[in-house]
Image (cartoon, rainbow, N blue to C red; front, side):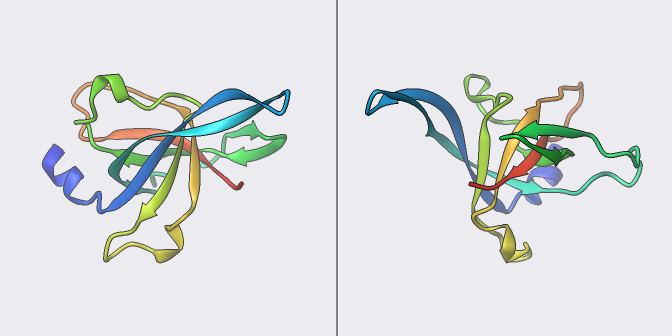
Amino acid sequence: MRGDAESLMLDTFTAYAATTQRVDGLNQTVWVEQYETPGKIAGRSRDSDTDGRTVRVGGVDRLVVEGGLHLPMSIDPLDLPKVGWQFECSAVGPASDPSLLGRRWEVVDVPAKSYATARRLDVVEVTE
């Protein structure tokens, strides 16, 4: 089943981790590229709770897309995504919505479970 799930991950996402650097005497957040990975964006499950959960990002309440970013289980354990990382859609597959290209999502939770077919991250869409 894992192979079936990964066969649907036709988009490419670039992972970024935030770091703080001193620039002109001020601390600034700089996004450092980590790696590229296949993946896909999915909406909320039909079976999930209808009440939306929000988190505050950059002073704005944003709706959490639970399990919204699907990544392969085969990601190296040293490269597992972390809360606060961002993933930008850098390429879309032939059946994907082209408006995904260039959009960015921040990881707000990294659920884990047994017998998973994909890493389903809870994310919020962010704008720069």
